[in-house]
Length: 117
Image (tube, rainbow, N blue to C red):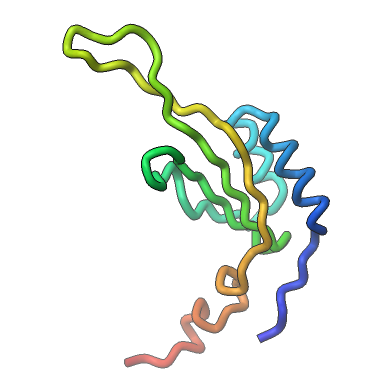
């Protein structure tokens, strides 16, 4: 299988992550989708532990895996039952190289190359 050619350098990935971190969550999602037409939403607000909620996009043409990180925070006064309202707060973006298993040219993703059982 051919090696994945990265389109961005590590410095460019860091700058993109910083740019996404300054945006609001909806704006960051829109910007990510505008970077690559074939963008795939892999995770949407999947909880990792109890602190982080992840939304992950794969950009196969750019060779990137972008993760938006949110934290749930309580706000407002407690109700008579003691519960407080919660909301998601967007805190950071992580930009990484796309693993070869996520690429479209992966033989495991091509139904014509996979042998039937």
